[in-house]
Amino acid sequence: MGTSKYTIKHFIVEIFAIILALVFLIPFYIVVINSFKDFSNILMNATAWPETFLFSNYVKAWNIIDFPKALFNSFFITILSNVGLVVISSMAAWKIARSSGKKNNFLFLFFVAAMIIPFQSVMIPLVMWGKELGIMNSRLGLIIMYLGFGVSLNIFLYHGFVKSIPKEIEEAAVIDGCNSFKLFWKIVFPLLKSITVTVIILNSLWIWNDFMLPLITLNSAELHTIPLAINTLFDQFMNQWDKALPAMVMSVGPIIFLYLFLQRHILKSVAAGAVKS
Image 1: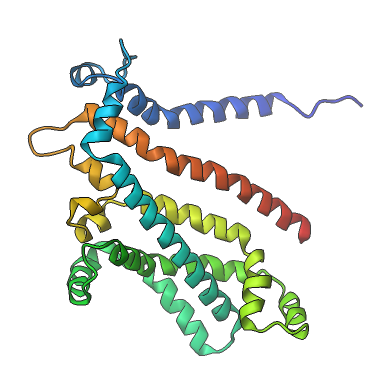
Image 2 (image 1 turned 90 degrees about the vertical axis):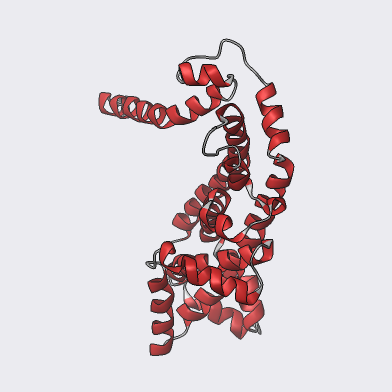
């Protein structure tokens, strides 16, 4: 009676977890404090606390890289790519998972095998086909490429989750008169909420921070995403750290907010799934 479950072992684990979290936050701390310094102070001591906080660095970075335009491009490409990947991948994975036969097994393995192809090996064919199809240097073309590269992993994730849903639920809906379209969107898709949130987080982190694919497809400065816009502050002879670091801090804000917001829904969905089973 009255014995506490909080032991010295728990205390040590908590201390270790806090220290580990602080270690992971060190790079972000360095980026934030240096975003308020002038260029010379950044070079002299990158870990020192700023003598004066230069908020003007953020104003300069905002204007030089035309941050609102880059922010719009990143939002536009990330949101539409996510919508396309969720719709295509969830429907394809459900169809493959609920259909039997060697053809469907081969199709699933075909998608999974595509995940192991290195991006560098398809860069040149990608550019050549992009020019042939006339989709280079456009937001729509970049979104189509993200759909092609992301659909394999997304189908793999959805496929495993669909198989965990009891078929009896779908069979009951069919008996009640649901056709395939209503069955998927009204019955199956709501049950995929937790994996959909996971897919959106993974896709958003990848697309928002991606540098290489926009670099080889977007030539016009008007179409630059945030990573490309920040890259213009670096050249062969001068790296403008006092403007690049504020831009980096501003760029991670939306994606951190999205992650924290959707993470709450993941925890709820996982808990609901555990109770249901």
